[in-house]
Image 1 (cartoon, rainbow, N blue to C red):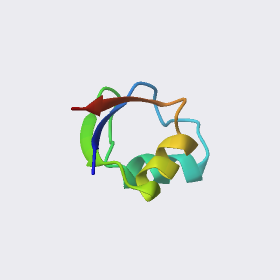
Image 2 (spheres, helix red, strand yellow):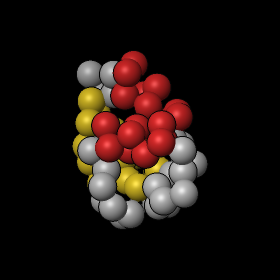
Image 3 (cartoon, rainbow, N blue to C red):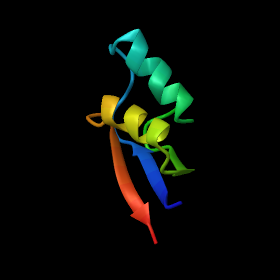
Image 4 (cartoon, rainbow, N blue to C red):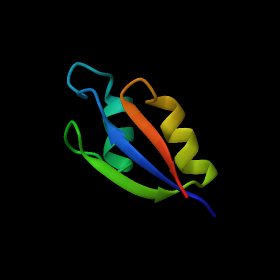
Length: 60
């Protein structure tokens, strides 16, 4: 399965509780924090919910 690198580019402050919890579930705590994860359907669904707060890069 392919891996993706997720980087938080915007703050979770003043966002809905659902979006804050999604960022936490992805393992992102601070702005500019990065995490490498497997691209499972569950992860891709979470990424889609907060795509305006994060940057996603595919890892070869």
